[in-house]
Length: 334
Image (cartoon, rainbow, N blue to C red):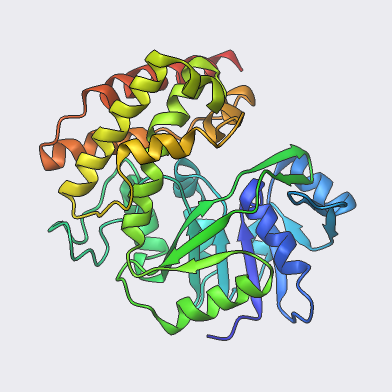
């Protein structure tokens, strides 16, 4: 595919970081634009978008087209979404307006994505849709799962000030077609992002990667929001540590029932988590910022898919009830 126009739809922490890296790429002739909102958009328009990379001496700063109205942008060759799962459906029409024949959409998402069962050969539930993830099937209808390239990000990032993004580590991004094909489009997009200085991995089993990351996200995100604890605090507290392990076991059981293969045991994943450090999870960041929490893709779908596969998920269901009420109270408190 020829990639001359790229829109980052949702230029927050991860989306904004990718936008800076692409715009800063030496020798690129692609036009980069971003869709953002609020004070973050104002800052980007006023002084550009800045990225502080891990271990870098000075930030990168780029000037690019920034808008809160995607209708002002022309159709794109590539759209990369930095929105969270619960933000996608309201943006469906805006994203759809950027599409033309051949446009691909890279969706960076945590948890179970709306397109999960598209061309799924492992679960026996191919093309199943969930209204919880895609109300009224708007994403499926307006964007289409056939355009999607899945992306699982192992990259800590945070908007530290309007227009300023900080990376916590030098992470990686795993890209894959829902069909498992190692397509020419996948190769072209991976090459573009690699050329921009991002650590990109292509995989024929993107769903395995989704479940592998969800094993941590489904535990740490809601528990951190409920307790306001950093990762180090959770791992150091025996009851919380035990709860994390129970959630991970439930996630693994549901994933395996749908055909996913895990490269790590729960014990190995827990040991790995001990080394993450004093990180605030994305859900804790959103809670503190008064934003709506990303609950359904991370926790709600573990319970829903547990019911689909007849796998018990009692701890996840309890956490779901609590964090849902926390979100209501937090939004009411605004």
